[in-house]
Image (tube, rainbow, N blue to C red; front, top):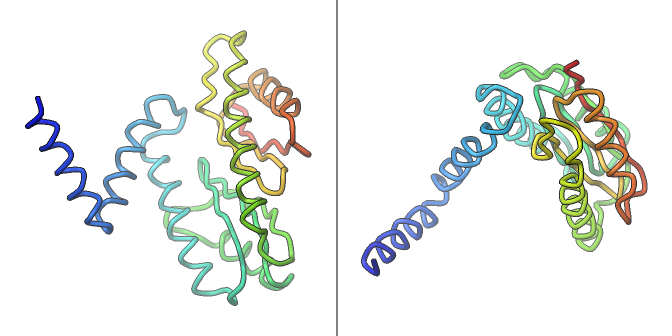
Amino acid sequence: MNAMWIQQAGILLLVLSLSGCAGLLVGGTAVGVSVAHDRRTTGMVVDDQTIELKLYDMLNKRLPPGNQISITSYNGTVLLTGQTVSDTARWQAEDIARNFREPPVRIVHNELIIGPPVPLSVQSSDALLTTKVKTALFQINYISGFDPTRVKVVTHRAVVYLMGLVRRNEANAVADVTSQVGGVQQVVTLFELID
């Protein structure tokens, strides 16, 4: 048993030391786990991850320095949050996202704000709020078949954005529960309804 543990730890260290491959391995594992409960196809989950990575790279190359942009893709719908250095950069980011073709982006929600990057304390507060919302969604146990892991939660400056493929009753329940979480200043629903 100890030898097996040492072998597994060695493999883990080897994987972690290969930083270029570790992301692929971790990403592949995450896809396998998330697809089990996701209403998106496996291909769409991979496409969304590809959109996020490629679009992030494109924005870094094409926009002026000093922006702090987060990209979230769900079922080909892209949410841009964060700050840009100018109104021009804000619209350039949206234009780049709208014209992204491999894989195709269907819809872009541009929630970028013009201003300096938010401090780490605000980012930490947003991360905590995201966790609190995700945890609160497990209270929705009165809707048959509802799985809270199907809801993508993104928080920026205490505004919570909700994405996912959900039924109308699920969307209403998720928005209601989210609005009651302490610290949430606003709830923005970007759901795709499947009923």
